[in-house]
Image (cartoon, rainbow, N blue to C red; front, side, top):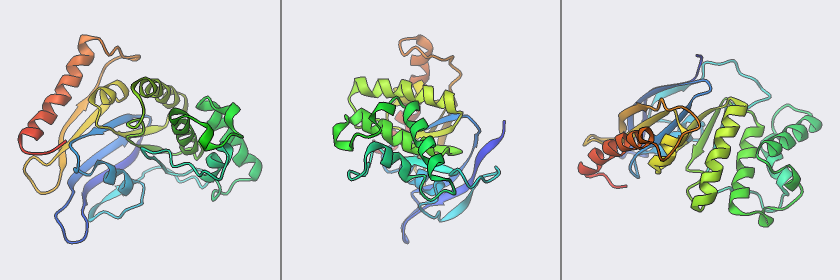
Length: 255
């Protein structure tokens, strides 16, 4: 399958301090779903910002070996907080990411409404952010990202601030959207159950006693979908990831 992003020997640091992340090398295949887990401070969120082009790496490269399309964005980044613009209605928030693309006003509106339809909020287009629940606001956040039709969707703990029921619901919705849009996803989370439930690949980052975090383990999750969280196979995969993290914690890292 084609590669969407190739990351080679990436190192991330600030000012003259030691690297936060070092020697990160990975390729993401088209339509794949990859989760990244690791202790706090290993550079998970910073990695997403570097891939999205919001920060420059200290060394290494992030290349996108696919044909550029000016009507789409190569990356879309979804944060933990919805960060909706309170002075814009829901449709206006989704339109925001489309405004600098070479599209007609009618095409931008069509794509924004289509994205809201995908996340089940087409009837909320003219409401305001304060009228929505936390889960609904995060759905709008996803719609705004999907509207630009990114080659790679970067998700930075998008469900961590939600209650357990809403979180499980949106996990299922994210899988439905992934299967419907065929978008490649890179997902950061602290929740090991969430990582194994969603992703086909789980990358564990940790310092392992060296300057800068790096890939400690790279797991494939060959479980059939839909996944049963109560199954032995599911528990075994979560246990493998937890064991890898436990080794890091033993070496003095924090969570």
